[in-house]
Image 1 (cartoon, rainbow, N blue to C red):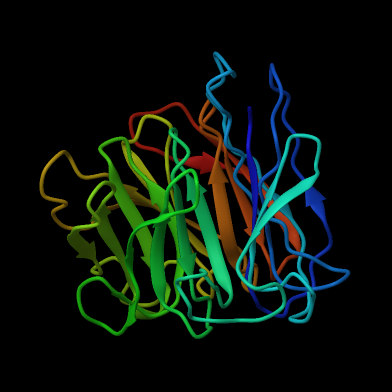
Image 2: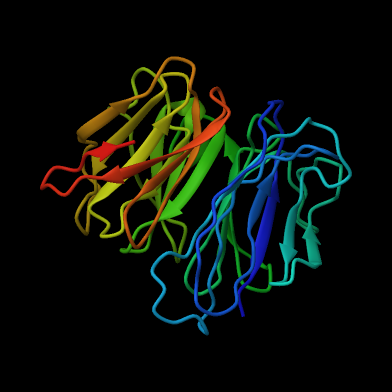
Length: 289
């Protein structure tokens, strides 16, 4: 059965709801990321398709809308069934916190659900927490890195999280202007990339379908970068393959990649829109709007 999650963080923006819809075979749920608010919400989500869904390579979708900082469900992660019924809430609704038992959040920025249902949450979009938390399918903490700072495995506004095909967890550590990398099973710190982010840190990160490249958004630069993914073993150094310079003040905040077509969907909070970029067929990755 498909499962759906809503990660609720905090920020103040104005963005109307944009819904990106794909068709799948079988049933699926909705994963929504929302900023706390009663009427306006920023939806950005990742659908996890369960084992019953076959022959489906696109397993994520995101919806976009922004909200004020107030609301009864702020600072929570919510689970919905495929019918849209709320079945579980993690965190203390409407109240930020740092606790681990029970688990509390303060402006969680994003989450990622892997193929076996384990959940990775970056909690701390400018709030009390600066941490990466891995949860099991039954919401037990498997490991976490939860200290603010500039050293290894410490964070300053962890804003996006994703996995590669080699079992490495990639975190956009926006305030520290770097990507940090961890082993998905043990949480061991594997390294960091910072040489590509001297001007501004990454606000979002995703892999292309074949795993050869990373797509990274930089908010205030209004830029998307294509980075070469590292081979197995050492992550090496960051290498920019190509860039997409967007218009001034577009402000790309989050992004998602269609696993089947490779299309990149970018949530632009300055332009109040979602743009789709389609990869051109060439040896060097490039995208056209």
